[in-house]
Picture 1 (cartoon, rainbow, N blue to C red):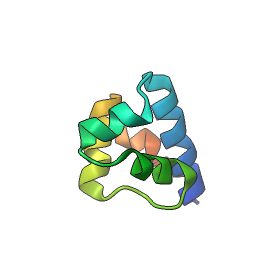
Picture 2 (cartoon, rainbow, N blue to C red):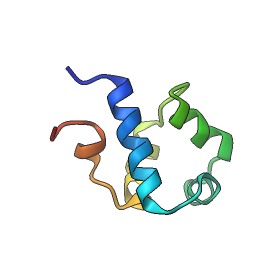
Picture 3 (tube, rainbow, N blue to C red):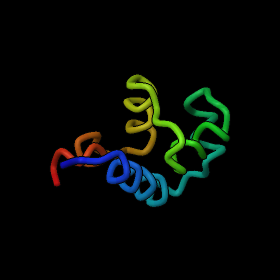
Picture 4 (cartoon, helix red, strand yellow):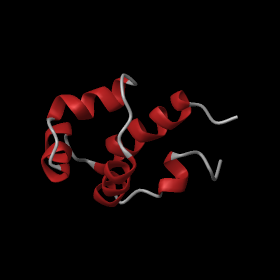
Length: 70
């Protein structure tokens, strides 16, 4: 079963390997940096459109982050 914790871990990994800072990601998404921090801490998850744009910014496969292709 896929859990939010699994998705959060893959999101953290994708951000880490991207080489981008939370501030850079937030700026590109048009959101505040603390919001990115909330995604990484698991306090909140991005809206679907934000998630799609985040995947583009990170050059990450959404299916990987969502653990669809485990």
